[in-house]
Length: 257
Image 1 (spheres, rainbow, N blue to C red):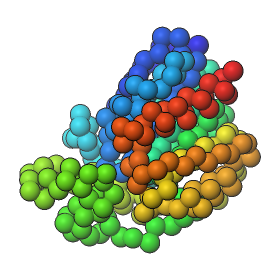
Image 2 (cartoon, helix red, strand yellow):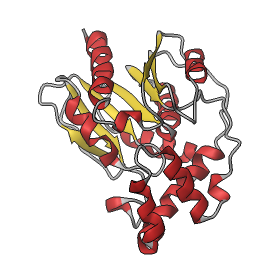
Image 3 (cartoon, rainbow, N blue to C red):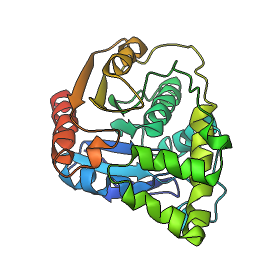
Image 4 (tube, one colour):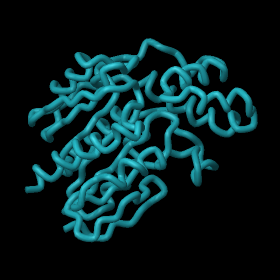
């Protein structure tokens, strides 16, 4: 059973589990915060406590300088995770930029003798993929345009064009995240020794199903791939979130049993 775990500036509890045996740590996509996973966390089955990573430069961490080097983010998150008891059964889930960040965190946990029980990666090509875009070097208007293209509802992002003050608050963290993922270069090393499950939507403009399948090359354990209808942020659609939660719950429950 998981001991009571204390949150940190980097780690926020979204769903407590009084009799939990697993902690699922969720990594938001670029520009996101812990609130990106509130709906998903509420649907994870019993036996799992859910935490999410709060990146600097947003919400209550707005005053903290955003970090634009992905491996630096992974190192800081790993440091906090290693403060939890060594008996803690950890699983990691990340979407988009969060998938690559979860992977790099898993590598560091493994190097410290704390290999996660499961790694879930969503909406992101395998780590060797190198971004060709330079969104982080574009104008604010360019950056907003990319967010509109990926959003399930572009109108929800368009407010950044109409409210310059809001854009001034939001875009620095978004730009830092794009810098982190677009400048990331995978350093070859040992494969993970934990199961990897890849989740991908069939109409995602940022990753194909074939690219998502290449995550199989990053573990010596089992691998499976699950597809969903929808675009890049398929997991935020009310009709899809329960299915995503079930995918995570089923695999965590099976492994725990």
